Length: 92
Image 1: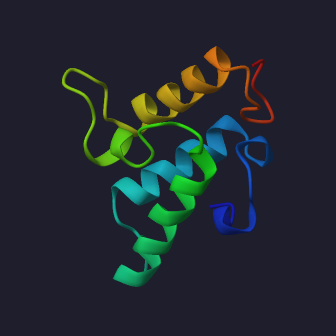
Image 2: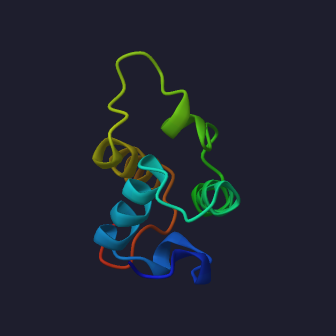
Image 3: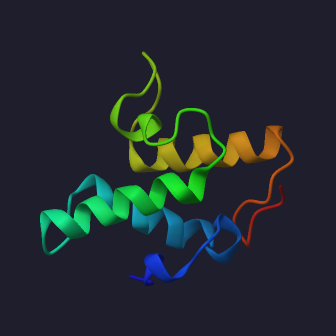
């Protein structure tokens, strides 16, 4: 995995790298609970100003795709609709 904690914006990630990061968070693959918490906090910073923040991952709206792919797609959608920078290999 790319060291996601060294990246400070979505535009530093490819979509695949960010998906890998979200998958690791979803599986709680950190070596410790503290590391898992750091990953979640970093995710929240990366997806700002999304109004749902980590809720898109942990408390999704009813019917929302809360899989890692669905979470990444939601971040991508939000960036596109708000004309914000997204992944470095994204057209938004």
